[in-house]
Length: 314
Image 1 (spheres, rainbow, N blue to C red):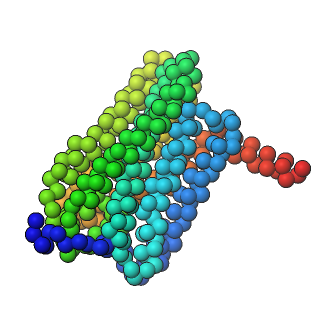
Image 2 (cartoon, rainbow, N blue to C red):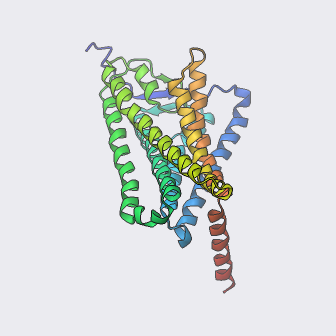
Image 3 (cartoon, helix red, strand yellow):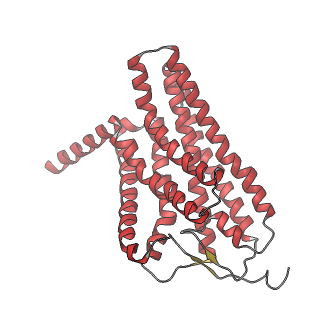
């Protein structure tokens, strides 16, 4: 190692979003509104699922974990982005940057695995409706919730430890609004081949295998529906799966477009915009997709409000 390679970088500079200064306040208000909507909407889902016994089912167990994951996933990046948009200080400490990267990977991977659990739940509900309660036992549900937390913990720790062993030179400017793994690797003056191999193999498995499992689940669902062609059954099945498919399309669509279909022009701008889609937009849309189009959630909200009115009247 040369002395240059051993330079300790105490902090990084997050350039943020490519927004003109005259539009800064407008976008700040927009992103603040989006973040507040994300927090309040996902908190509402969590509260309703906790308070209403009718929602104590496997599907809503997974949904509550997904809402918590979305809430935290957005909170990893948005507060720092909003702070930087109103401050001239764009710095983030080295330890803070690694911490942000760890939680970004953790909650991003967690959402990935939870979408698989929700797809399996819909597969069992539609393909084996008479055996649903037997198959989706409390033990299996607990396993499908705990396993993602364990796997994502090890995956996030692995990348964080591999990143911590690297050295960074005098260039500490990150052309992004958060400490992205790939952006940090580009700044390192150490050998990053091990990190890149781990990203390629382990990261590929984290994305590809869950995506294939989801595709397989819905292929089985479509096959099962077509075996008994009933207009009522088809409408019910697609209304049940529609919200989940919307989230899957938004989440994986942006990731595939960002990492598997890179463009040669304006890569930084494209990377930033598409990152906003799955870190900010997707968590914000989750409450609307799962509550406004869901009769169970609407019913739970009415029951909770009625109970509160009765309580206050007494």
